[in-house]
Amino acid sequence: MRKFIVLIFFIIISIVILILQQSTYSTEKFDHECSKCHKLSNDEASKILKGAVPDIKVLEIKNSPIKGVWEITAETKGKNSLYYIDFSKKLVIAGSIFNIETKVNLTQERYLEINKVDVSQIPLDDAIIVGDKKAEHRIIIFTDTNCPYCAKLHEETKKIIEKRKDIAFYVKMFPLNQSSIEKAKAIVCEKSLKLLDDAFAKKQLPEPKCKTSAIDENLKLGRKIGINGTPTLILPNGSLIPGYKDADSLISLIDKSS
Image 1: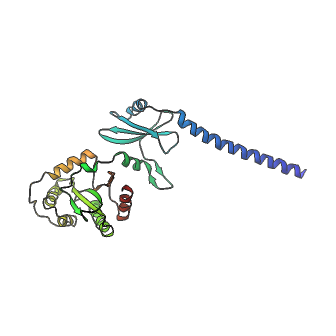
Image 2: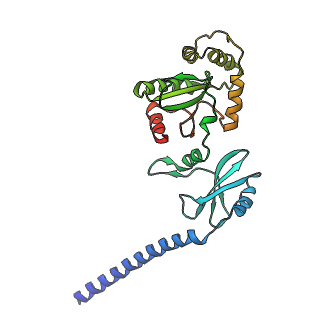
Image 3: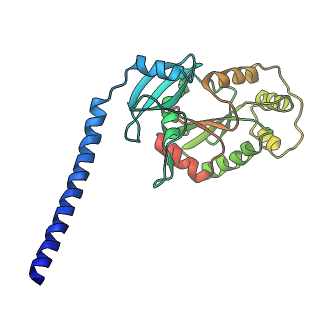
């Protein structure tokens, strides 16, 4: 009797394992077939998104990192943005997908990929160079002398050029308020790194020694390529990085972009 009960027990366990294996297989198979069977055209995506975002142009549709959800690259007002539509075509998501395990904002990474800047179209004649102008890697920074995070980033760039002689920073003045415009002009007129240092140190700067349109041109260019705040960096591959980064984080980004 005991042997019979043990036999029945093992048979039940075996059946449960087979059911679980079949369930896993069926789920994987369903997910695989689901992505093949469900289709979304550009016209469909446009109609869905226009309900939430007028004047939108769909550029690309691909599977997102989330199963059962498409990633849509779309242009609005000259800027590329990311949206997500589920396979039921009833839900639109405008937000970030964050990988908890790797602690990476996947949406932000994709956003940087689809909004790369043509670095060759950015004039550097007015830029203040931090580092060796012959350095292999050129990073462009749009900065404002009244911005505290710009001042912090400026100190980090100095740390970087001490470690890496193959990196140089080209600083373009991008004053966001009237009080920093005259400082920006004074720095650009003399192309002076010392004056830039003094401005971040809150020292008094001399009056501009020239008339220059560089500041107005920088502001116009910044708006065109999507710069809304300072500091903003542009890496050698054209990736636009907003905000402050410490030296090690920035070196990592530069190496990945090269």
